[in-house]
Image (cartoon, rainbow, N blue to C red; front, side, top):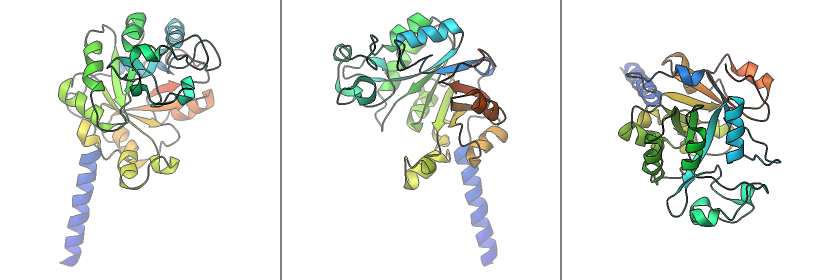
Length: 275
């Protein structure tokens, strides 16, 4: 009887695990168009040039070269949706504090990587791209404040081009599931325990996609260095969810990633325009 009890517990735990990591399986949107493109990470950028990451010039170069674009968004102090990756300004602008500590007007005083470029508004990027290439919009949400989601959604609902959203924060994916479920949504993840970014239970849950039950994502975007994470493989091979690889930095990495991923985000080299 004791053995039967143990088996029962193990079966229940396995069923719970498969339920937790399950992406969206019903009424899944068609991602064929998105998978036809290569995506320039933060635009076609070079941080030592006049087209640094997440700048208007980097985005213009990507469009002109025929690449899709991956970009990052967050909120300024006065609620403007800006395109910027880091939560802090030190690396890109050499300034103290976070993006959310400054108003949009104040942020315009800071240059990106010493160039003539400034932190752009999402609104202006959308006008410039004008639907010519697809966008992967990463929502940068540090903890539980989801005010970025409705602010960005208001802009994106009026955009005529193709885009999808993704986030490391499962709560952002959950927000889109509840409020704009017809938009393709993606869960970003990494080998957090291996990279020593997170420790303990949170790192385990995020690395192993155990919070997919919140957002039921349409695709999983994972660090290409960790293709063999079991949960990632199950999402692609069992649940047939699209697998996106970030960030590919050479043709050799791209060739290796093609057997484990379906969509590719790149920087540091220029691949063929379309897959």
